[in-house]
Image: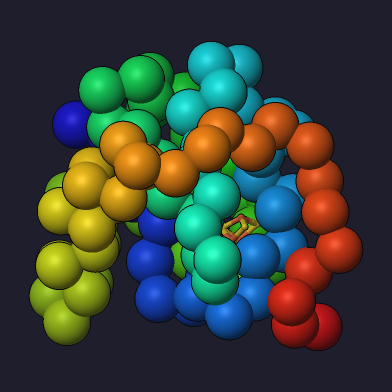
Length: 91
Ligand code: SF4
Ligand code: F3S
């Protein structure tokens, strides 16, 4: 089990989430971030940090966004780690 970044992050990337993660499991794609589910320890620290509420516990991902569970797993593996806040794409 792990946290999952969902659609609200896409095109936004506030990156407030990355600075609180104790295990550096966020990875940066061109339009959104992905959490490596094999590294995430389910601490929950990132969830309240996201201004657009894009991060859900795996079991709580809305039905119409379940595909993001696999998207996070696959794309975290092929994108670089991000640990520092950046200027968001939106907002
Ligand atoms: Fe990182 Fe904790 Fe969020 Fe997992 S739940 S991504 S370990 S801050
Ligand atoms: Fe995305 Fe929210 Fe983090 S918009 S980059 S999940 S703070």
